Image (cartoon, rainbow, N blue to C red; front, side):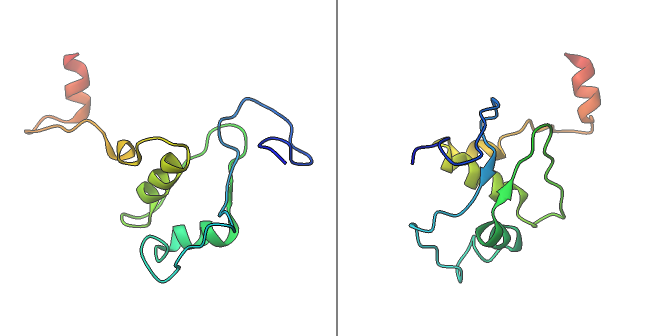
Length: 101
């Protein structure tokens, strides 16, 4: 059965609809990143991404960036690109930097 051939699968244009562990690829759940609660839950239950906007919210260190890196790598993208973001130095805020542009 190929991608998108699952029963009940209706194409809707979303690039990612669900993330789940491939049972054919063993994971050592005693080592990082599987020891991060968010990753452990994803490996156990999967993650369905409904249509519309999906927001990952959590405390620092809860696994949001790790989840994005795992998703990027699974899609064949650079997993470290998920951590790229503008940095600001000095006392100016992000809104002040935006106003300069």
